[in-house]
Amino acid sequence: MKTYIGIDVSKATLDIAWREKTNKHFKVSNDLNGFKEIIRKCPTNSHFVMEATGVYYLHLAYFLIKHNFDISVVNPLSIKRFSQMTLSRSKTDKADSFLIADYASSLTPKTWNAPKPKILEMQQLWTLSDKIITQKQMLKNQIEAFARNPFASKLALLSIKSILKILDKEMLRIEKELDKIVSTFYPREIEIVESIPGIGSKTSQALIIVSKGFTEFENGRNLCSFIGLTPRVSQSGTSLNSKGKITKMGQGKIRSLLYMCALTAVRKNAGCKQLYERFVKLGKPKKVALVAVAAKLVRQAVTMIKQDKLFEEKLSLSPCFQ
Image 1: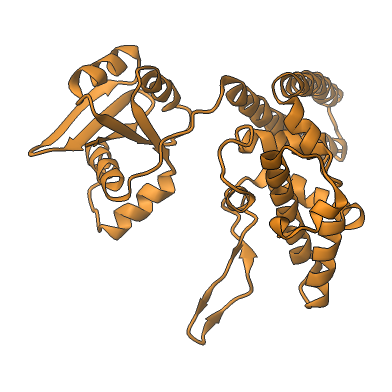
Image 2 (image 1 turned 135 degrees about the horizontal axis):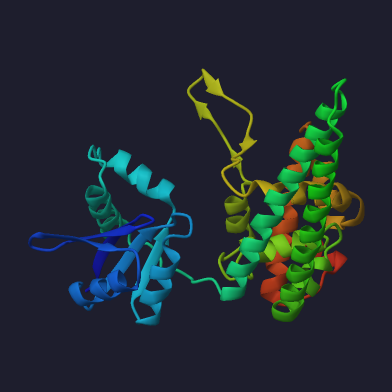
């Protein structure tokens, strides 16, 4: 029988806790020495459970997998909801580690599917490119603001322009590296996804990154939920009955990319065009119809990857894509 071990992760320390006849708890440093101490002190049948807290859990997670332990990495929101459900009041690292252990014992979370190293590298490059885009826009806004000043500093304007050139150069390097990684490690996935009318290279890369090479999710519906393309309905009695809206709890950047893809897909993708026209005929706002098309593109991509097939128009109309 498994012993679920809750681990509360912070940058410098790890709190380890589990339930036996008496409660067990200890704290170690979040480094290799601490990891070794965990293995020494925990039962051999341990199943370790931790929250996905930034990057601070990754070294520990891969260390435990290397030493043949089962681990689960859960969404912090799930732990928060469990805490509310159990009316937990304490909020300390020790209490949190016991809370995670109790969550695991009650709900038996699935074993973590560790991302391949190249996926982690792509995630970092993708995040960095997003930061650069944001920074570039801020600097462009600053140029406009300075230029409107009657005593605009030439040096300030030249300096910003120089920084923008550097950012453009770095963005190009990042894009080339992403292209190199996907063409080397995910050539078939890219070929399949980009065969779908409406999906381009940036979106296909993004889908590979968020789905961990299409290994993380069982079906397109689950991936849509993760991205944040599923509707959230608010209805209770007669006083609350709002229109369905997307959850916006997922990945904002890829949602934007998919929305732009949907604009092309309604013209070039038979299944997406059919879906869009049906939504519009039902009186749905065009934006809602486009979000539905974006979700359909994701389902098409996942289904075709699972079947290892390139896009065919007749397949796009198949019920398996609905």
